[in-house]
Image (cartoon, rainbow over all chains, first blue to last red; front, side, top):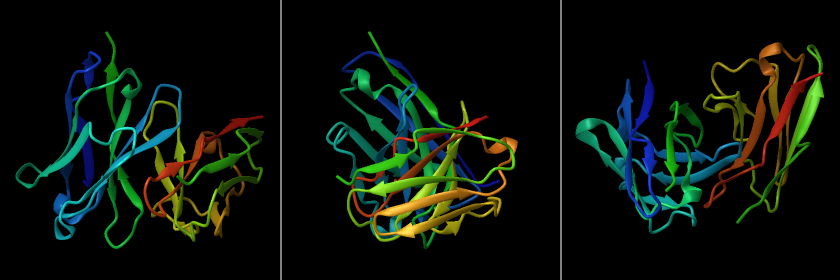
Length: 121
Length: 107
C-alpha cells in the first residue's frame, strides 16, 4: 500500500526542539517532492514547507513563520522525510501532516494521518 | 503573499442539493489551485488539482472551474458523506496559502 506515516509528535516546552519523521512505504521517497502542512487546533490549514526530490537536489522552501527554525531533510536509507523543529513557540502547536506530490504534477496525492505537536510550559 | 478568500464561510444544504463554493485569489494564479475536503479528526483529502482536474478516486459529482483569480468548487447531488469542511489552496509560487475554509452542514 502506498502511504506515508508521521511520527515524533509530542509535548515540548517553548524554546525546545522536536524532530518529526514521515516514513514512506509502497513508493520511492526520493522520486517525489514532499510537503509539510499543519493545522492548529480549531483552525485552518497552513503550509509549512516543501522539499524537492533527489533529482532536483532536495531543495527546500519554508513558510516565513518557520524559516530559520525548521529544517527538512531526507534519509533515503530509511525512506524517511524529517522535519527538525527548533526554538519552538506556543503558536507552533498543531497537527503536522506529511504529503506526497504526484510525479509530473503539483497535486497532493497522498496525505499522512498527522502527528500532534503541543508546545506548552 | 497571495491571499485566498473563500465564500461562504459556512452553508447549510440538504442531501441531493447542488452547492457551489467560491475561492478568490488576490492576484492571478493561472490554474494553480487545488480543493481539499476535511472531516473532523481526519486528514484532508485532495479533490481537485490544477483548478479542474479530478483527483483519482474522487466521485464525479465534484467538479472545479475557473482560472486567474476566481474559482469554484461544485458538488452535484450532495451525499451524506459530503458534509465536511472544504479548503482551497494556491500553488503559484511560495508561500503556498490556503483559503480559510467553508463548512458545509446538513440543513
